[in-house]
Amino acid sequence: MADGRTRWNDSRTTMVEDPTSFEDFFHTERDRLFRVLCVITGSRQEAEDISQDAFARLWERWPSVSTMENPAGYLHRTAMNLFRNRYRRALLAARRGFAPSLEDDAYEAVDDRQVALQVLRSMAPRQRAAIVLTEVLGYSASEAAKMLGIRASTVRALHFQARSTLRDLREATDA
Amino acid sequence: MPEFGDLLEREMRVIRSPEYGVSDVRRRRERRQRSRRVGNIAFALILAATAAIGLARTLGHLQRKVPAVPPPAGTIVFSRQLSEGQVDLLFTVGPDGSKQVRLMPKGADMFGISPDGSHVLYPDLDATRANFALPGVVDLDGSRARLVRSHVPIGGLWPVAWSPDGTHFVGNAIDRPGSPTIGLYTARASDGQDLVQITSAPGARYDFAIGYSPDGSKILFLRPHDDRSGRKGDAVMDLYVVNADGSGLVQLNPPGTVLGSFDSGVAGTPSRPVLEQRVASWSPDSTRVVFAAALATPDEARSGRQDVPRAAFVVDADGTDAHEISEGGILDAQWSPDGTWIAFSRSHPRRPDVFVVHPDGTGVKNITSSSDGVGSWGPVWSPDSSWLLFERNPGYDQFETELWFANVDGSDLTQLTNRPAEYFSYGWSAREVRDP
Image 1 (cartoon, rainbow over the protein chains, first blue to last red):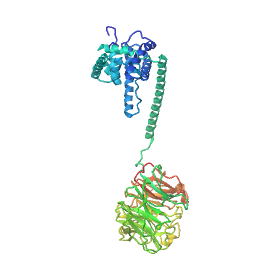
Image 2: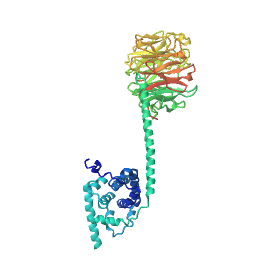
Image 3: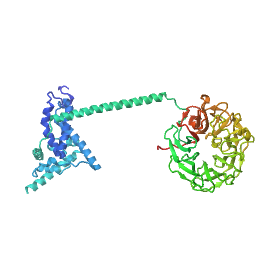
Image 4: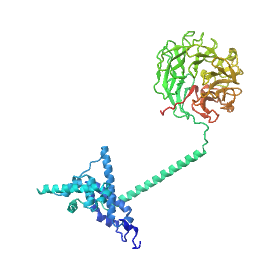
């Protein structure tokens, strides 16, 4: 405590002096979170629902969340939790035989030449999430693994798989 | 592979922006808050209700007196006739008055509960059939009612009681008056075969079985004293025991005593006979018999005089050592299954009440009190010897009776039925009947 800092500095939830308004935060993060979720879920409808839910939950706790060092990180974790829960429910429903089929409408506008999205298209939603969290949102493999409830080695293996698929697709496109 | 992230970021821009704004998120937040408030209120209400129920139970438990004996268990079976001319129907009911079920669609006035309590033996009555009465068995829950014999070589066979091992039953035969085929018969309970005549009533009389001895070796029965004694009204009878194979007939009531339902309406009961099965019963060790008898000649017994003395006797099963254990208008006598008590009803000097006494004649105590003018009689024991089931009637109309039970210590007098009627026959099975 001699340097005047609190114990909060030890975590990622360091107190800061000047919190931004929720609306500013919403407008800054909305499109990015939505697109990330579109890629992960493969459904605009699903992505809209999860992202709205994540923002609503964040808003309820905004007085404390706004003072965090990284409110966007909290938003992503909230969204990933919601995604995990829904994904688990969807799997359960699929096992019972009455799950609605997941549509790939988010990919409808994707050109065949947009190879990165094609790589993700070949993966399961949780695998896509691992790649997006690390490649797009910049989380480490262990952080992404924690958020998704999988092993860090699995995240690294998915990276390897994504790179190989991308290389193969590029070679095929070049040819 | 950093370029994969950049590539992905660039390609994601082709995905159109979402169509919701901050107002949509606000509505969603408000909806969540509302549903959370409702949930909290519901949770608080459930918590308060649970706490209130727990508190009420705790207080109830603290205030409830600890019963001296376990609550009555099992199932009570009874036959009921609502008015003159109607058929008697068999019912089962729990001791708490719940789950009353009509046992079967056909009428039957008497029955016997199997030793394990799971089956009920009854007379299947059909006036259009050559054999008017045939033995039938129904499960205690009313299922699987079936004839155990579709034909008998006599006018009919009225089943009365099971053998203690549950394999046979004893019944009364009816036939042409004076026929030597009239008497008691035993038969296998499973199929009615192995039919054996064990007594032959002399003259124009009908023997009436009471039951097997608990060891199964003997059968107790009543025989009209002479040809003038019919089954009802002026039935003056003697008590006999016979070996289960028909040998060794012995009269048990001493000279100068007679049994029967000749006291109809004169001893404070409505004008109906006391069921024969309740005037005598075996001790649990099969060595002795208790019976209620009048100390009178047959003519005195038939006279209808209310001052004819009646006493409870205990006699050895070989007919020796008959001695009184209680006196004063005894109507019936039933030995408890555990052997410690004999229950009886006594009509003198008031209307009848139910009592218990030890087999040696000591420790007489009241179970009921007719000081309120309500008479009680006809006690039968619960299988665990803790409870007594009997009839109660406020007046003298035989169709105004109800069934009640009470603890053997005289406590917990409880009304079982709630339908004034004639309850001709009733008994207590140790088994519980499943929910209908």
